[in-house]
Image 1 (cartoon, rainbow, N blue to C red):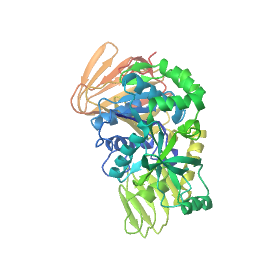
Image 2 (image 1 turned 135 degrees about the vertical axis):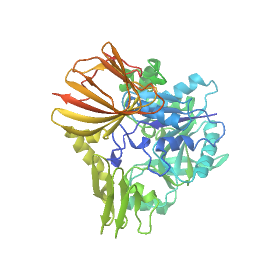
Image 3 (image 1 turned 90 degrees about the vertical axis):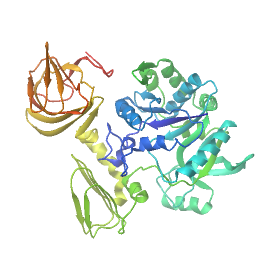
Length: 475
């Protein structure tokens, strides 16, 4: 049996402003079918035989978004492990291996997949995974090397060694190489024995844990302690926080693969890309006759070699070349395609300035639905709130703001102090400052309302929770 371990904890800063800390690239759709990268990662396993329900490892801040996306594609039996903070791939996969050993006595082969890759030739991908399972079952730690078609400087490389006896399509790993400069990368291509490092792995859980204990015992100790301190939270598995944070921040490559004598590599040609930047999206995207990748409401004239994404409004271009232009509700990115990798520096500046645009979109998703700020000035803020059928906000109060609610669609059940109100379209109510209250959607269609906040402080941290259905902290 194969147990997929989906690594969904990245932040994707190079794809800002579409990717944000609280809504990263693995949760975003970059195609017209509306499926996110995470959803596509899981769906491409559906045609493989002997595959168990996936184990998804993500940041605790993304847990409800991940759970909702899994349900949206009909995956109801996945396990979701929450990382208190990112510690790279080695401790995360170690914990996945421990859970696999506990829940499946036959110690399944683990298939470790980043959640943010694009693969256009899925049959070739699945064929490689099936071959990898055979090699991993024989005690090898398998990585998959992408057959390069250009001297790319944004990927690490793997040099393949001698063919493995009994597995003619698999090779011993001769060495791992860091991201090269252009001249070195061209030398790798000319050599013919180098492959791109995909970050996809396959091995038995006991083999990985054994090698991790040999080469990175401090990672294994921290992961073991964090796993031992785990607890259930709704449909999630929370790890021991302090124990997990004590782990070194290290990848599978550095912790194990570069040291073990059991490493093997299988070459793959499957139309793979890690979608690490806007320039990579341009390279792999479907282009028009002028070499442009366009998505959303875009009108282009005399525009060539550009990638243009529109999320909310018409974007028009004229007379530009090799451009990255990305529009969202609260930010617009304009950059040369050549410098697209440097977007992470913009995000660093935004973080340094305490700007919300680095963290979240104007529309913010919550387990009960979403809210979107549509206007704001000193002492007031206007939001559009959407509550899913059957969902409710926490029982809460605010010290610094009052709220007016106007229902524009659906039915609202409102607890306001000792009162319970039922409001329908065009009806409204007022929540005084300091009043305990709760908003609920008892209906079968989404509830939409306009909230007008007024007060001396309008930050999201002015919420005192007394009761919550989603396991969030209460006071």
